[in-house]
Image (cartoon, rainbow, N blue to C red; front, top):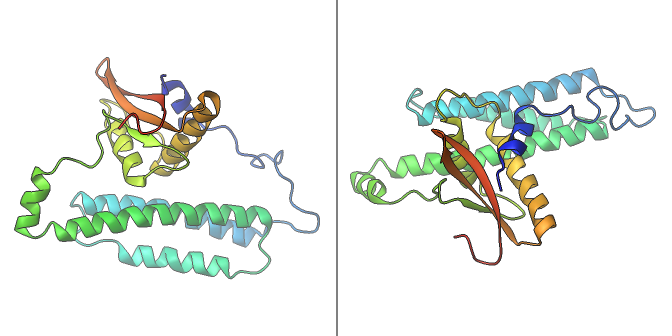
Length: 217
């Protein structure tokens, strides 16, 4: 099963409900606060900036992790959660931002910990000889959720396709994998879905197939 066609949906997503006024209406007497909406927009930009800054750190462009920015995002999340008069739509958006931050934060903490442990010469030699945890060409298994590190292994390889810059972020890609897995599981009755990358015409393409039980490992 070729997942390339479906993948384009996260590169050019359709308008979300409510984006043009045609989605979920605001409850009577409760209009979104421009101030809160702008603060949530700013929070989204800060979370995206945090992801980029951590990638710069892991690539060696920054000498230390962007902890000041991470603490600022945490403060913004806490302040918004304690704000009164938040509508249901704003609360949903805020929850989405918080889930995105938590996913990134878990991945960042794991990678920072790995880097710190890798400063020891013996650990470096062991890490160099150990195989990677996930192999995009062998595939990863997705059920109700996806391991962020597994999704990133596919994402980074897709983003490295010759002559192509990524048109979607890691968070959108993880959401895509979970949704596609749910659709395939509902259609086939499988327990999990294996996503892997296959080289075709000099580029990697995403493939998906249903997996029963412990198969596909």
